[in-house]
Image 1 (spheres, rainbow, N blue to C red):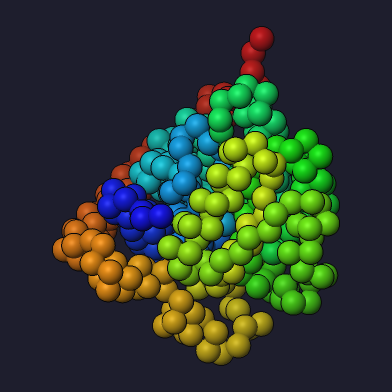
Image 2: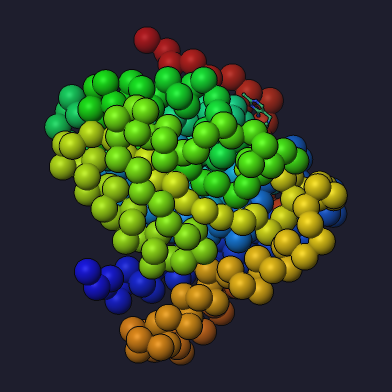
Length: 321
Ligand SMILES: Cc1ncc(C[n+]2csc(CCOP(=O)(O)OP(=O)(O)O)c2C)c(N)n1
Ligand SMILES: [Mg+2]
């Protein structure tokens, strides 16, 4: 099925925004101004964007420690995200969450998560709520190859299948959990795991927006139509270290260079829309310029924004009944 021009433009903008946001964070983190840890999603953009292009604000997602891409793809405000990462009061979580706890419930973004394997159980809850409320929503958990081995993830696959929940489990397989190779750490394979829990398995090349978009559409349609959960296995490569500061001594010398040269989702998107005359390339150049401005403004605003005050410390922690 043809993807609409509007969706293509929005998706390109989202992928470009993630790329520019992340590359800027890479440089800013090195200055020492950003508190906490930062895990970059750069190189994996087409996964978040291809999946989320099939979702609405009513659908819910749960993310990971590498969550900036999922947030941007789900429509979270870029200025608010940057301020959050800088720990400022104007951040989407008022500066108290930082990179690994960005959430925006108004966008159905249940949160980045410092707990590996923390997202899938949340998605079972969200999917149960969609099912009980009959609101037609789908809940999507993004998690890594490392997280795929967590008990919480395996329990969630089981529960979602037992309750036939409208859930999609997106395994973002970049081949590593920190410095440990998935080929060493993951027993069997994801396909057999999905079969073991009685759910369909789909897979795609995560550097190809069109492949992710179309495969995710089938997975999400399946879940939305009441047929139960699906596992979507996305094959990816990360372009930076596990966290900022990681020397990546466990990777082959040419691995990242090869990923950048041969598996760049922005390049393959541009080539495809040019070859198939799907978009005017000037529109893509305009998006590039506008995204550069947006990220620059976000950084400047974040650096000038006030810090949270002491009185904010206990706000939003407990619900008063
Ligand atoms: C429960 C838990 N165990 C261990 C960690 C430490 N840790 C942080 S990220 C990570 C690797 C996760 O790998 P993967 O799920 O493949 O995601 P990726 O970093 O590759 O995106 C680990 C072990 C953690 N944060 N939480
Ligand atoms: Mg991984």
